[in-house]
Image (cartoon, rainbow, N blue to C red; front, side, top):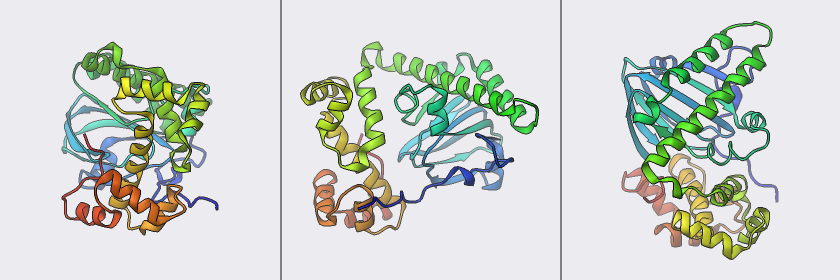
Length: 301
């Protein structure tokens, strides 16, 4: 059976852009802030990476149910599919760049950077955000000028600057992570595994599929995941599937059977039992608890 189309997605055409052939979209943070009374409700974009630089003011909100509260300067990457919403102070000044994920992957020449290090949402603040802050600001300002222009080579210039912005975010996030966790926490195999999970978790693939794709044994993959992430490879796979299930139950009115189909389960009853075993509540009970504010769509800390 052909899998159902993903639920409640925001295609690129619905992200405001000024020309029909735009390869990406840029706007000042205040544009949507003023339109929405400075509160952007929770939503998600599939197949889009969103890079945000806040240079003045502050904001709070959630990304994947995790509370976020920042004062400028701050860098925010919202990865594809991540549920997010923010409330800004009225004095906020910032820039926002939205790039189709397929375009970003092309810019990185087929490497796993877009799916790996840039495949998960993050926020960079403090010293890491301050480092080279003026260089980052100049990149966004250059994108703003190019986006409004019709000069020859406009698209090529926009894509070049988007690549530099993505690299800047990657480096600043790496610097912050190194400062918080130490250099030993990073592991390429686990990053590659997480990238594969993002691409295939809806397909109900076995652990051996992932191990074979990575060129290692299932046991080696699980041992590495346990050493780096504190969970086995199978647990990380189940966690990713259940995160999506919790998102859809919390943020959409889709029937449980439709959500099960969306996640590759042919039998809704089996999906409900598996969800209850992993989460502790049946899908219907979980949805009711979220509506009451008792449960959250975010993964357990």
